[in-house]
Length: 72
Image (cartoon, rainbow, N blue to C red; front, side, top):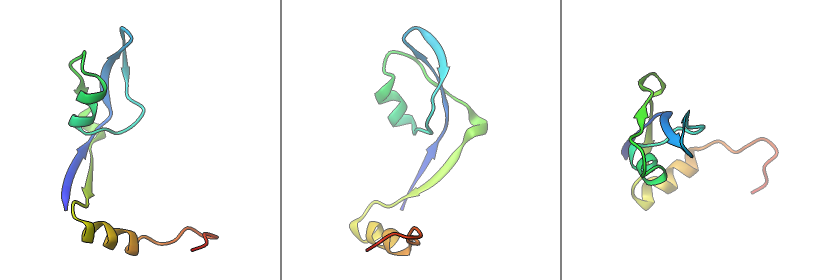
C-alpha cells in the first residue's frame, strides 16, 4: 500500500489567500493551484494508506463494513 500525506493548504485563489476545504496531497494541490506556492498547515496532517494494486483495492472493499440499510 502507498502512504499518502494529506493536509489542508493555504493557497491563493482568485487573488485571495484562503485555506482549502478538503485535505489534499502535494500533487493534488500543485495540480489544482499551479499559479501559487501553496503552504501546508502542518497541524492538519492526515496519513492515508492508499491501495495501489487491484488485489489491495478488492481487499479494502471487502473489509469495509456495509452501511446500515445498504442493499447488495
